[in-house]
Length: 349
Image (tube, rainbow, N blue to C red):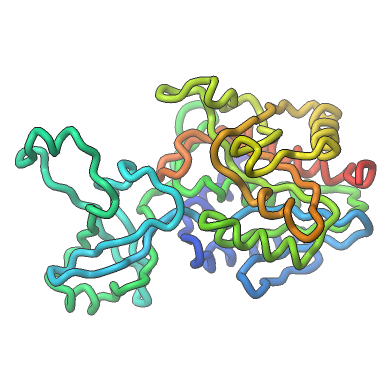
């Protein structure tokens, strides 16, 4: 478990907003190399790690990118204005410390706001929108900001480090989807007696349109696929069990459908396969019917003439924030489920 937690920490602390996944890809490439026969990076930037075998051909997907920001404009006083890359609830951004990834290296800044001492009563009652926010990097002018490397297009991520909480819970940024990357690497390590050919694909730009999954699935054309991602829980204040029946600490979530069926409705043969892998190995699992949000599976299953696809997820609280929380036991069981499923896939497809 400690090795798994160390790996999650390394990946969570890495920075790779959509379109700029290079540093994350390098970590993953180094980690998976001992467990696969071939590694390549395709034209989109997806990392494809292959264990050669026979049939069927299985695609396992985990996206490398995280939600972040991008510099849109630097004003005459040196304050940085930005756009959102991926889905943010604006209030989670306010007063965060950020890292601007410039060609000269990391530059730190803060998303500032007016102090409450000078706010009018009506200002205190209304939320601040992201397009009203700015980043203070300590620059004195536009020219000063540009001199230290800040310019239009500079990617930005939260400055937040991984930490342990009580019991087996951990918190950090980018668990969506460095948790999926971690479980996929661990699953590759655990796999034994594989008859199938396995393509572990660490995809790019999921948060902005499932882009890497679309292109890699088209190129590989697998017989069956599993996407790994996090899923929301309904076990903390502010959300009800009717919105999500999933609980942290109760095992992997196996998706039945997401986005009210507009994303994916998982085919019955895939569900039978994943359930059998879990039940025959005494791996606890939960069934997930989601109303909002999709995963790489939504793109993969609509590729070419259609690819049977499932989703396995560790439950995670507060996703798309820098302080997500998950259970390491859940993550370990997710990795086990992926590995055990691949070991018996030839009986189902």
